[in-house]
Length: 139
Image (tube, rainbow, N blue to C red; front, top):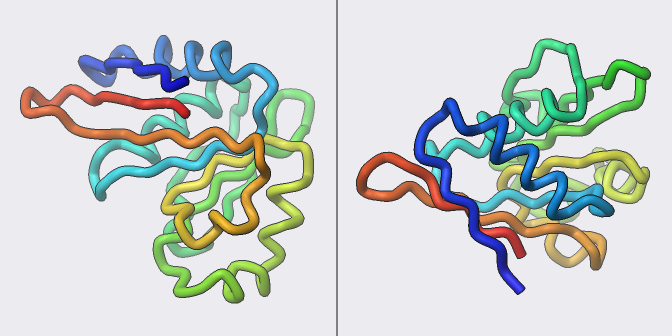
């Protein structure tokens, strides 16, 4: 069953990210779908803050995977797969090790990973409304 969260403004990101983690409390792998500019990276940064990461959070557009740490030193993985062309390319960088690490994995542009995503991965679709607000559908 899908759950929908409306994000009226950036000031509600912390509340939205808290709701996501509470709604999906046992999940570790989150696949983010949405057009360019819908706020996937911004929402992932808010999620990392909820998980108490004090690291400098940035888009992994060029590095493909950024690793952050929570206050206890536990890794949180943030992936941006936009530049990858194939599943094989993802496998070459060891993507499965991240996916099945038991750690939080937040994945932007996850389409090429769909064949190997864990069955319990959470799929999130972020859409921009005409008024600039965001609609987040969690499945």
